[in-house]
Length: 479
Image (cartoon, rainbow, N blue to C red):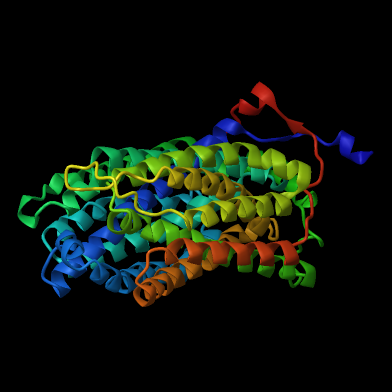
């Protein structure tokens, strides 16, 4: 009876969308980075080891392209290793920071501006065959993006009551995918494969430089919009009562108490979620890291087809993010994530049967892109949207508002551990098998394992039913 007298919890959609500009910048940079850098590394290692471009190597001895993938994996993993160390550090630091502009905003602003300045130097060094300069610049970008990433992601749960975080996370992720969409458009306008397949002397640097410059400019704009619209300290003070109510209605087995050790039940739940997360990120990052090379060197298709994949997967993800919160309210976050993993697994099994079409369509002899792969990306995009939408709220559900940065660090420790290991491991698998078909098989196995761990070990605790404001009233200011 007491619940009916509670003031309704309010998901402020406009404010949540503004927070989403932080994630817009993150996914924008990550999409450009993941789409271009593995191919940059493949080509530059081919030039240094075999003294020919990767296109020339593909034409003369395709197996050697697979032989260098383990080196590509190590470089990509080193970046993730730095993230594994730095993300928890910046999470803890931001929890303890107190400034007039908030505890997260200083890290977001510094990380954004340094990353944005350094980012365009990656293709510049690559074009001039400066391997050391390129790798060092990649490391600088990653270090300062880690300064940005944890505090930016922690900002949403800072100012969102616990029962509303799954729906808020859907909005945040949709904003992030808009950033990814910008990067995808850049990939269509500036075709990486046309640069890679051209003779080295005829390569046009602006084909690879412009996407990085535009991404840097958009990142800075997104950070300025965030800074102008989100006043951390003021908002936290205004919604203090709602945040306290959210703590009482959290989906946890035992109440959270900062003055006591974490309960056994909550600790078991946390470890199970993080373990499953580790496995699904191993799968997802393997695809993200190697799909560009898979398309260019295995399917022998034009790289812009990868961007169309991203568009379709992004649209499916937006649908998933839009409905995931509502699904979780009905069946619980556990079964929403389990359903997402099952859908993703089906898509990856289908991918195991994708092969080069053999139909030449491109100016430089590229094959037509296999239509079946588009369906795979739709299934994967929708399924992983359900997973990502609910998994982060489940982790920060298990802590108080004083430790959100720390628990965000736990979430990213699991994901970055996976992303540190999987490029190297899959690179070794590709080197051992000399078969690109190992990519979908590897990812399908890991997705199946994550489903088994998550479904078996995580309990389904539904968020408490609370009165909420919906419709136009949810769009009011308050900040």
